[in-house]
Length: 224
Image 1: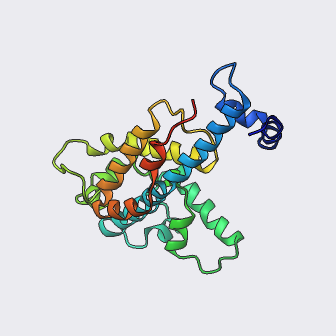
Image 2: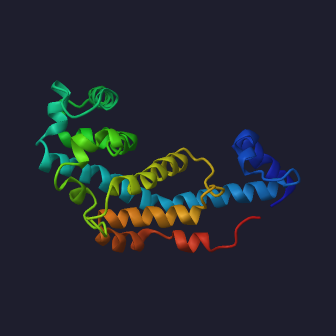
């Protein structure tokens, strides 16, 4: 890479964005750009895992509420708030409005499930929802069908930190932010999130491994 090309790319990507990739004062533009490109490659390799997790988690939580508590609960919550706390209920109403703005006339539960953010579904996993949702017989087992020890006390509190990790990492990846310097270690993040997906469905891991090349990417020589 020539000096002129480096300078042009720094201007193109903006020095403000690239500053996150400058670890030391004497880092050259070449090193910074190599880290930036490597970060893109790692982020891309994590997309299948994050996608599998987001879709399967929201569908399983919805399935558990439909099975254990109330059929068509999302549609019913629009008219009468019984399950959701005010903040999540507000997000549900906002999701409905977004769908209306997009031209949806007959809004179904599947439309709402897809429109609601990952943050909404993870908030349903907080301790404030333990009584309303997670302490109901069979609820946890529906969501995390392949959890290794259902007799374990307070299983949700052991899973929730991984859910938080998932949300933060997902947002950084989807907003094109740096992840290769994650304080927990990006490989540790991958391992925990893969374990979380296995709790939801072990079978899904076989499909994940067909499309996820994270291990191959992470073992390449990294920019120093």
